[in-house]
Length: 538
Ligand code: B12
Ligand code: SF4
Image (cartoon, rainbow, N blue to C red; front, side, top):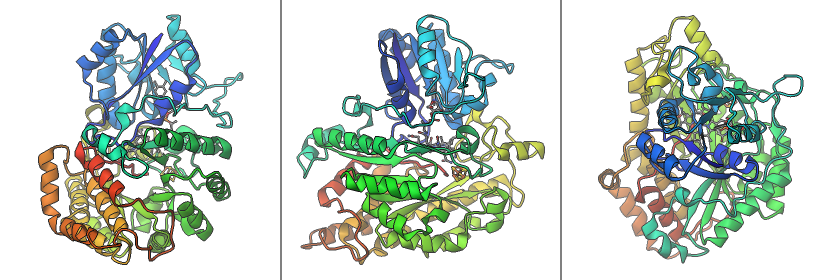
């Protein structure tokens, strides 16, 4: 049987990174079946397109996975596939919580023939075999012989065959530049950001977050050996195609068990498996100097930190009191000392937020080492404690907000400001943090560093603008370039000075920096075809 795994586009940005679930389920598919992958963020497809695709390719089963914000598109695509006579199974965080919605048991239309609840590592092979026999059941739940929910230990993690998977749709280098860039250094013909997990679960239970409910509070880790082997496989693939590979460790809290993280990072270094990597780590775990040294030495470049708010009362409200705003600056400085920078994520519209929260947050941000601040709105995702609290209090203004997804729009009323005021705060945050003046300031704050660092921060900020500012077309890019021309001219002028690229970093050195040309390659990759980067609010 031929199977299509499809991930809908998010309708806002073109994702820079493929979704792990597709590769994982592909690797877990029993022999004798062929699995094709389509990520709507990389390969745009509409309802007619997917119906045509399943007909042209003689697909016997379509698997669709989606977060809440993509679920409306996911349902539309599922409807089109089912209308073409092909069964659909849906999985992922949204349908796990809203299975009745997907199965049409809540009075609405049915979108899926079957739903896979929770982690589907163990149920997927059964789903495939049942579908091949034409005997799909409505619901697949991961349970043990006693009917108790069971979660994979991750000790027996499947080998994802990165050496042979078709990754054409996930190359961030524009086609036109590929041939030239392949010849530069070790090669920049491809640049891919690949998701890798080293563990699952987070015990912290922040009120707005799906993770503790979905993955559970017991944390499970892969063996160091299996993670290291995966990195080696990815490096080999990049080398073989004269390209580059970076990794996003998608664990919700990569250092949740510091001892284990240190041992993994040591093993990565010992095996020569370093790649440039990004990971999510909460601020409280970054107090450990040795951990931060190992992060830098193993290739860590960007750490995503869910700061959420600079107001302790807000943090307490959402059960995230372990975040201490007073130490944010020191944590970021500790990272910057090793040339590791942070993506700092803030949520506005919390119950103690008042008008001016964005500016108050920016005042703090400006005192920190340069990074990538991101701003979102408190969103009641289904089945989270936040959703239940707001529902009980009658504060949900759009209880089924996902059925008509509107980006950057609240679905409940905050206590101390209006919804419109909260929206204006988010706009102010993005406008100010990514203004030409703020970009110039970020670059200048690294004046003691070799040019590559400044170019990197500038490019990263430019790409991040795309989460909020439309940058999909050539005109939009030209406008951004015109607005930032002073900083660009300054960097270009410096680029011609001898030794500008190769100076020693003034801070504690991490791993060698990419040289001039690769930085240009990333710029083209990020900008050339309008792809932009989006990170979650932890
Ligand atoms: C990596 C990641 C991202 C990436 C994007 C996804 C990518 N390219 O990988 C980035 C960084 C861009 C991102 C962004 C956002 N994210 Co995010 N992200 C994650 C994260 C950390 C890991 C996802 C992952 O790969 N997990 C590991 C895989 C193995 O698990 P899985 O995807 O759940 O898949 C398993 C099962 O669900 C199931 N399954 C999944 N799909 C399917 C399909 C079928 C057919 C079947 C049978 C089974 C199945 O089988 C898999 C194996 O067991 C998760 C948290 C988490 N730990 O999952 C949050 C998470 C998915 N993100 C979340 C959110 C809210 C966001 C943002 C909206 C945040 C924001 N405020 O901006 C943005 C939206 C981005 C956008 N523009 O669309 C929420 C989603 C909650 C929900 N109900 O939708 C999560 C759960 C985190 C949270 N805090 O609650 N995110
Ligand atoms: S927001 Fe981050 S720290 Fe909090 S429960 Fe979710 S994954 Fe854990």
